[in-house]
Image (cartoon, rainbow, N blue to C red; front, side, top):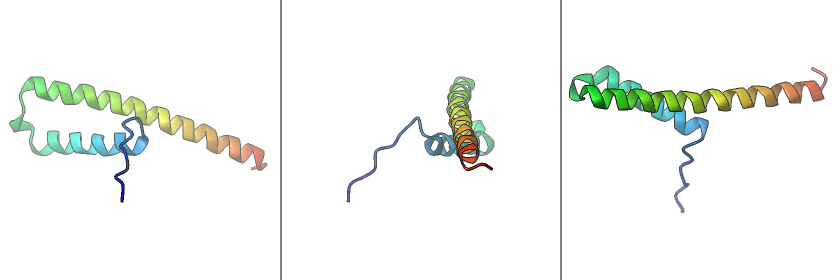
Length: 71
């Protein structure tokens, strides 16, 4: 069985990684320096941007499908 390649631009990857970052910052924040926390924050912002873009694209596709189906 071949391992599926991770798409770092996918909604699923972004959402999972955001959950990981949130968990680390909620439960292990004392283990990180201010610089590391800032790095996590910057990564989270990038992941949020990807996630919002994917959700917007999906919403537009759903609207288009509904319009084509007369809904």
